[in-house]
Image 1 (cartoon, helix red, strand yellow):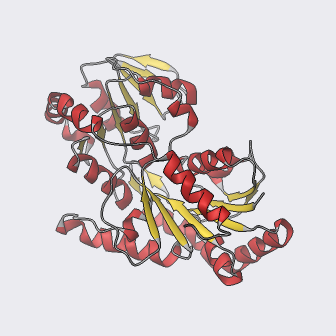
Image 2 (cartoon, one colour):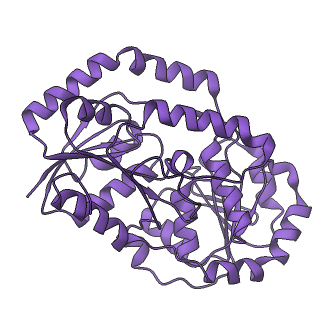
Length: 350
């Protein structure tokens, strides 16, 4: 049995869901998680978890709030030495054999300083470890995202990059590109094609998004607003993993942001996606860019795109479904093999 220290980025749910899937699969090993905010709230119910400050991205009104993000990250960066000391104290008590990080910044730094093997397992490193044919106007944002990830998150020994698209690796890091990792509750459901649209939006007060949904000539099930009510063609539902996955598996198509976890789950169920990536978030833009490039759906950056966008998207549904049907969106065994090799090799995969 190995003792594994696991750092998890606390913004959004996707990182913690991925980490839970790994820990449940390798439950014969002992895990100690480090996270904060949403990540800590999910992980603490099943595994030992220590809350420590971490880096985060602040979103407001469907965009990255740059000033708020800088402000939120100043404190942990200023306190970086103290946070690393706390991690060293955890290591002294827990005595881990190795570490895994899902886009957590501080644990890989400490692992590098003490010689503890560390595996990075996330989606975000697709930005730094792969080459992308992004439009020229996106190059400044692309280079900035690469620079930030390289500066803050690049201290692991190996990199497992989970992605529904497969751009060429750049070859400068020990990296492996893997299909999406799906939770067991997703795999347990069989998809079917219903008439409703599933919409997910984290912002509770975004009237332009709701105005867009009202134009859809179908029933729309809306998650993310934490409401339970009906309004015209819109049915708002409160958070429920079981209910959400039931509605996802049975919808006609999905409208959401550019988050990789939801995109991967929707594509696994064969659902086309109309994406509205958060403005200023290059990773979400990149996911939406490849979504359209591969023919799995379309994206727009403004909810005011209106009826023309809806008509174009709905007229292409069969084309999108055929393209999605040719893809491969479950990489669980490949991911588990990488983790098993890393653990079995004492911190070095085959």
